[in-house]
Structures are given as structure tokens and as C-alpha cells.
Image 1 (cartoon, one colour):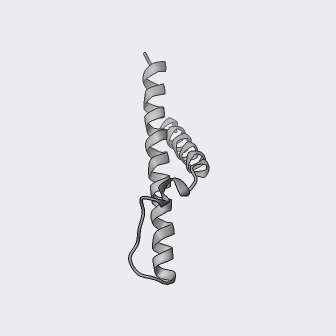
Image 2 (spheres, rainbow, N blue to C red):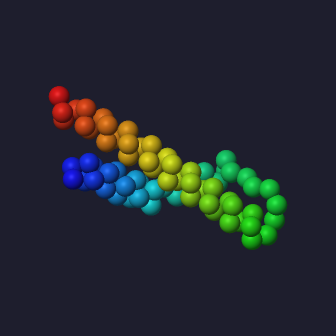
Image 3 (spheres, rainbow, N blue to C red):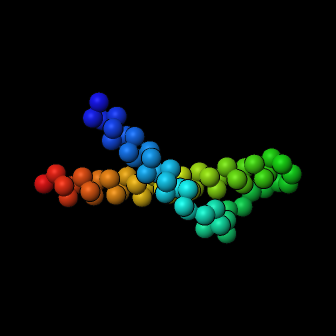
Length: 72
């Protein structure tokens, strides 16, 4: 039960961080080929993946740093 609580905390923090990261941060680094609706869907999905991935990296780093500090 304790591990589920830690996983839920990581998921919630990741979603909160990704909510506050604007998509415009990554828009200058992303380009997709093609035109039309499929290209725009690929563009927005790629931006979403970058936002969630960076937020997950930040939240996991913070989690392990805090855990290391408080479990000494």
C-alpha cells in the first residue's frame, strides 16, 4: 500500500508540473513533416510527450532527492 501512495504522488506532481510548462517552450525545437490534420496531430502529440517527459524527469529527481534527504 505504501508503494501505491508514492506512485500516486509522483503521478500527481508530474501532472501538475506538466500543466504549468507551456507548450511554447518546446515549439521552437519541434518540426513535423507533411501538412494537414495528421501533421498537426503529430505536432501536438510530440509537444505533449515532451511536456510530460520533462515533468516526469523533474518530479522523479525531486522525489529521489527528497527521499535521500529525509531517510538518512
